[in-house]
Image 1: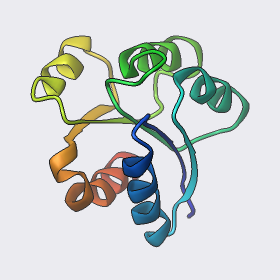
Image 2: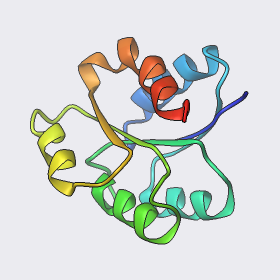
Image 3: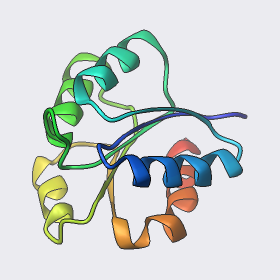
Length: 121
């Protein structure tokens, strides 16, 4: 089954590299560098998973996660990808379901495995 994935990150080089990794793994992708654009996309299309950074130019990944969980669906799996060393703590402190964290230094090794584990349900 093909999975639809939305990736949100304002680092365009990282966005392209991660996008290529996931295209090579046969996922359907839509990418954006803006939180507001991501929110519009997720309200107009069904995604199996959302991948976002914590620190994005226009708003934060936390803003996006809260908007998705409160207004779209609490059950959409979200993977937060950040280079912040305290990023996992930020995500854990939110206490939301179906939200995972991968440090950017490990994302290319772990992303496909995490996507598959979150979307098997």
